[in-house]
Length: 466
Image (cartoon, rainbow, N blue to C red; front, side, top):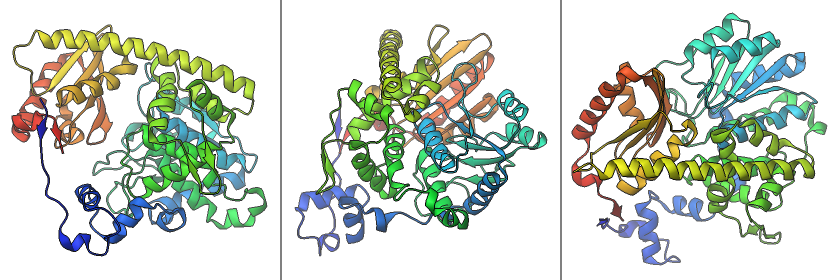
């Protein structure tokens, strides 16, 4: 049963100077973390020219830009290694578009979710080295791939990490790590998606002397025309729509409504999205729901049920015929994903019915479940029962899973505290992925239960309506 929680209204000093807005609106804005007149103005009227931060404030960005420019000048082979979700695929497509301006074709590598798992892997590194790659750029992954980056260095390959995930005290031995969460990074906005970090890298590249000397090759407002993909990755990866993200999504929707990408147009068409664009007022009928619930699931379905290369190819294709074919395949994969999610969710629900008292932590797995839908099932369970949920697939002696949490319980912090039982893990406070050995499952579960019992009061596991 939902518990009502009444938060205090905004103080009078906050409301002064904002009398043009109803009092209850100001209360809501204040409760959402907006504490000044400037905060309110930025939130309600995002401005592309005024509210985006200097990309060179991000630690490691200048070094990353220098190495990328050097690779283009020397015509060295470059690889872009993107994650298999919408964020990573959009990030790879965005980054690739900059190289294409200079008739430069990077090697694109997106790992398979089932066979390779999240992040860099040694086999992929060896494959890229065999192809002569001298610079690998990760998008939406890499910040915890220590051994893989060490191997790349050994094989004569520089690595630039463009990531947005939780950063441990230790960083990989990459040529440059660009992640707003790393210590010593003065970038004022931390909640960018992986594609957001890639976008900031492109903005930094556009400020370079190299770009200025080659200005004739760069279309006017080149970075703005990337915003449809940046907004898509940002929303689908559940980044908060505050600060720069709010600017990115507002203008990204405007770009989406007049998208120049055949693949994006085909995806909207098969999803039943009919964009309307008002050029005079720069407004559209599209919104974050369009991104998160119509387009995103279809792109994500490729990596969940098959291979994310299909989604990437859709985003970069230039033919309407190819775009229509790929969009149709993605729609079919999304239907498969929906059916599999329902099947697994029903099985978990049946197990939970047999438990007298719902545990503070949902921790369920099976050999028959698909790795690709672990996170979806965990998210639905966490939303319904308002408690952390861990859903995993058992493959022989190995276990691969996803976790989703609730406000007030930092799941990545919890996994860090039990990392002795894990092979790998990564993510955010509210969502994470992990792998372990089957023999460690019970120890992992018991340790997580101890943490949640210590940190979370039972009444906090009741859904709240604020």
